[in-house]
Image 1 (cartoon, rainbow, N blue to C red):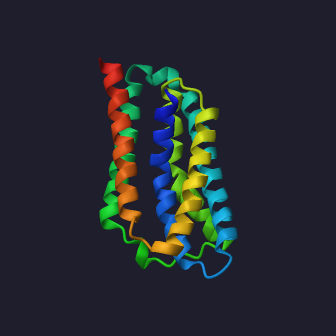
Image 2: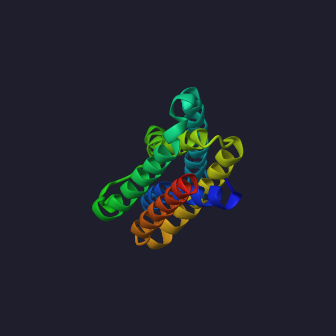
Image 3: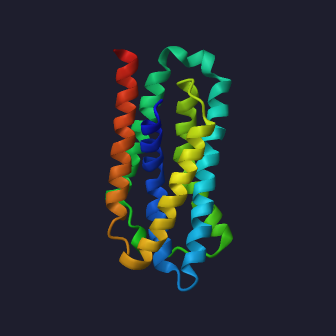
Length: 185
């Protein structure tokens, strides 16, 4: 897998964190630069950790599914991408009050926004792709995007949350289709 593909996956995965970061930025009353760093660290850290966990889990049963693993990868990315697009239209994060300064809430948000990365890690293991560099890239990209999300949330509200989810979903679906076509052709 190329660095460009890994970077695009990282951007796609970071869109959930971006939307939640923007909502968090809206709810912050003070010390928002400090909290932007803390929120970004939580989101980036979990986005880096989850693919590693998924990769190790996938490598345990890889020998049993090699003949159809590309379909699994495609299916996972398709489901994740479609869910992100669906959530863009039918989820209303602006109605939810997020308290990111509560560390338990922040931990829950970090885990919730990184579950997709677990499935991507599984996909990487099925492709026999290494995981540590992609996990690092995913974590760094998510950190940067989450930090920017908090800051944008302070400035602009939730105007771009829907577009971020749609873009992330389309990117993940596109990568899934590309992987499927590479294995079928």
